[in-house]
Length: 112
Image 1 (cartoon, rainbow, N blue to C red):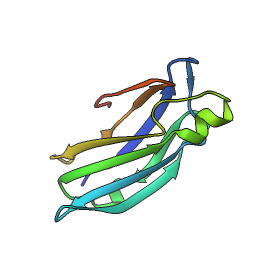
Image 2: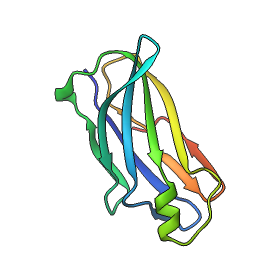
Image 3: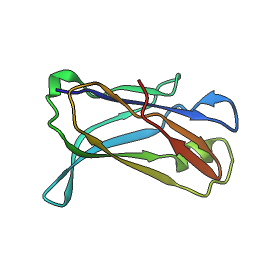
Image 4: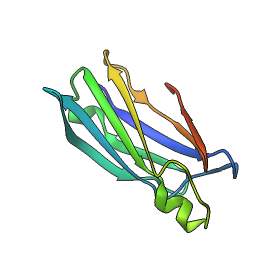
């Protein structure tokens, strides 16, 4: 039973990215089923996408980050209006998936 959380850092500004909608999906029979959603807080975090109580099974998951409105609020053009990160849950550890963004690039990694 795993939990999934995320946070977003705007590396161009050196600050957390707040008010970004994030949706969590699980792949089931080749389709994506929504299993959680949230919005980043002032610290750029969403801690409650999926908690240990949700009892997420092993499998393939996807986080969709809707970053277009964030950059619009900053009056900044961006190349990627949405970022999708697909990853595998294969054990019962907590899975933290951070996203680093800038107007023209992004990066992600397995956090702790």
